[in-house]
Length: 102
Image (cartoon, rainbow, N blue to C red; front, side, top):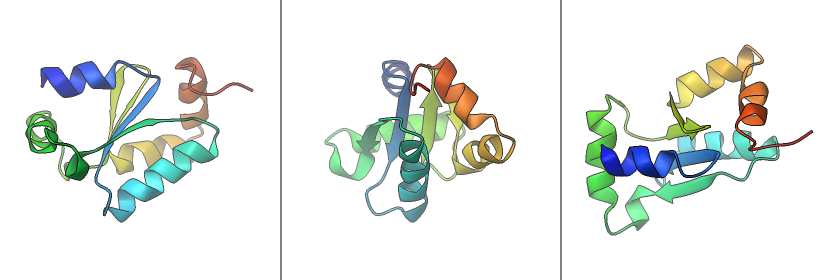
């Protein structure tokens, strides 16, 4: 878990993704549309992607991708991000993480 947690804390927004995953694409698009520039790790394109996938599973993530970190905190997957968005809490979280500016 150390690697994905460390990588998740390096930037304001980090997304662990797979290039062929439509939900991953949707979450990346949603966050980018607010003006954030997330760091994206495409697990299916990285040499250590399988190891990272195992670490995400160990964090209890099912499905394994997408997994989103905002402001060094594990937010969760698409359900958590969409829930924050619907409640109007996603933009304030992105602002607090200094991922976007008004």
